[in-house]
Image (cartoon, rainbow, N blue to C red; front, top):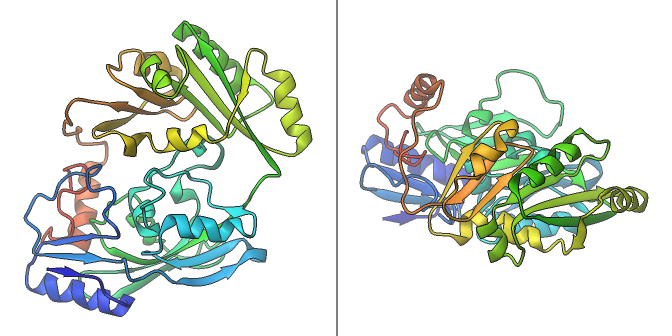
Length: 340
């Protein structure tokens, strides 16, 4: 049975009703990232979607804040903010199909992670429904809201395994006057990493520093180990980058759409963390296409088959949190990489 409630209250009531009936609940927005998370570990008794919850609840451009329903398509929110030259600069994959709730629930971030952080760094509040039918308010519309325990932070990156987000509040960032993308191809990995090291230690600090292995570079029209940088700011700042980046050529900002969507464009993509100092070890043995957030420590690579990741540090605490929110493990069980 598929349900798409028309209000937060209806969603909360549906959660409670199915929880009482001990039905496994498949929960999401447009379910665009079904293949990226783990499959449900139990057959779904009901599918609940936020697709009908898509209102812009409050937008204050002068305050750099916005509150929207979780089912609002991310692309629509981005377009609205762009009319006021504002943005939430997290570059999530599946941007054209994802909902706001899906982006927050997965905590996906893209190339500009280095300059602006992850989704978690932009969320200032949310409302979510629990399996006992309650609607919980966490945080607010004030950027420096530090009062009390922010329960909503637990739902960011939880893949919908703890509760059902119904609305999210964000702090916003002004769009820059200019952006510019620079690229340089290297025949040797060590030369690309030396260039990355010099950039990280320099005065100029790009928003994005991504390294493509030769397979990924070829797919995007480059050759060899390719370093891509994106910078933003005034005309003076961009001119400084042009003067300082010896050996780099300018390329279209459109390349970042392909980089952002790397996890979405391939059937099987594995993501793993690495210390930025270990970039060479992380990327050199990739058997397929690989894209590294070269200054942030995230590697995406194509794989032949998924393997279940090891339990992360602190997993026992995660298990306890899951038991608090969902003691019968009926809400998206297994969705968090097969672990919860």
